[in-house]
Length: 297
Image (cartoon, rainbow, N blue to C red):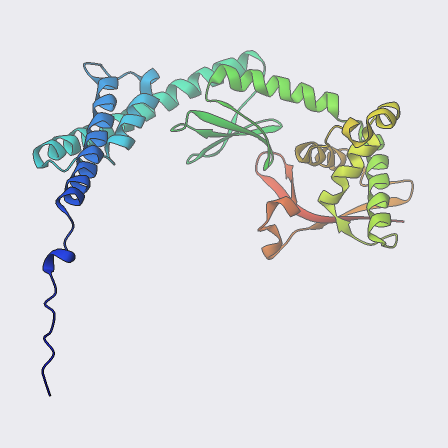
């Protein structure tokens, strides 16, 4: 048998071309150039500046981003890490001063209005100014406004803004809500609407959040509904439902004319998905998640 010569494989077939190597190196250079450019822009924000509490967010941004930009040059990265550490120590001190300045101003503003603030937790900082809760994010420079655990709005972290927003929100809640006797009747009607939709029997439980749409419909102007249809309805917000239910309980009107409102507490895993439950607060720290309701005669 005649041996068939084996074709030698050309090693050059498996190697990238010189053009491919150049392209890969160029990508690396461009990547490093972008990182150097970002670091340059960050350093320009604090170059020659003395730290001030009012510039806290700027120093925090520089520290956070600079910490993630490894440049691949040993001596520069070493200097970068030293700077990041020093800025971190500086930010810790600035944060304390920022909190003290914020708290002092907020206390002063509230006292002139006869209001008090109660600290619910320190980290994160959560404040209660009756009947509203404020979740403060110092690093983000923002503040969440809630009734209990139900979000209402988000605002900039500023003592003046918090006091003004508190005043405006309380006024809006008072304007949008109805007295407890009228609310009891509206809620009973909304409950019956959900029962009809579900094919349920009187006295059966329905999900509490399912009354939000019927409540909006019952509150809508009839003439506007005829002209615009469902688009005429203003949403009946979750926080407003929680507010009205808390007021109903405070007024001792869970029973009226022989009809009693029964709220079913959410337990265990039923609170995992917050859209299915509603938190009704009692004061600053008390409260409960509820899942269902029913009216019993």
